[in-house]
Image (cartoon, rainbow, N blue to C red; front, side, top):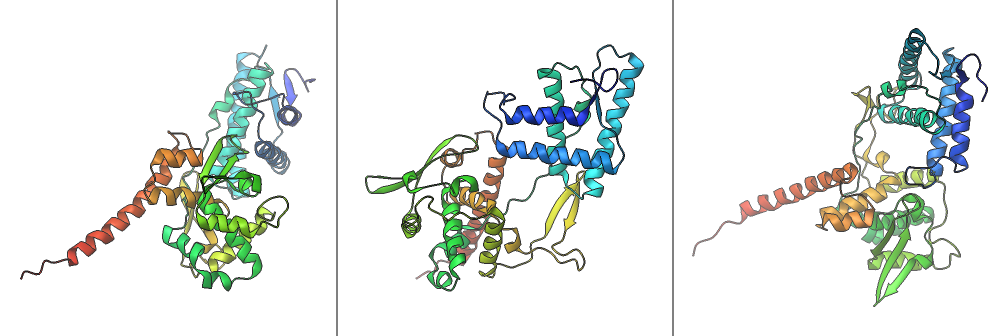
Length: 357
């Protein structure tokens, strides 16, 4: 690629090449696997953010190779990237109202781009990107309690009062809350994924995201759900857009009357910020507003732990690594449930007084 002037290159053209080589498989993960399509989409989103930032803030973007640059010129580049980091961060936080996790993920992808230029293209663009700090926040995990999941599965009166589209949503949702699959895998399972061995039914799936194999024993109610859709020719559950699915799930949970206020907190630059459902009148989110397609997998994992399934078995089903920080958060969440149940038992114990004859 030709430089604009001595040792200077068009940033966005280099980024386009980075995306292109990611797309065609020339750039791969460290383990040799192709980079996932979802990651590629995120690079396109970042490219648009960078273009908009440069245009809106009149901040020209360029990349300089440090080869043959004098010390004073290198210091100038250092100041340039320090200014870029601050200006781009301010743009994401203040102009676009984004939060720590998204801003941090943008910086992480920018770091990957610089590493690509240094390591794969051997452009010697320096290590200024190491100053692009990656912010993160621990977002609250929202799941259904085992009692709530029990209600959705077994309360036939509630089910019969649902419109047909919400009955289908309930079937997919409760099935997902049982088998711990990611949404992308759940809506790709076919009847060939169901295996019967010695009168027991199993769901066997290879995850699209991690390529890991899982084999899960299916309870009777999950088998009943599968049999309900036997007339489908391809996938077990009818295909539905993720946006429509999330709307339906919220409507489903709203009908249970689990509509108590559940405050939403996010973080900007490490500082907690209250997020409102309706900013104008300071209306808080409700519990049902937080329930999405992601809740299915989270609920399944937490339910298994809450009901005393050993952690190593749960990890095998969920595909988490033994040292996974995310999985440890599920363990902590299930511990709170078990503590609560233990406290109920202790309270009952107080009432069991011995009556002497």
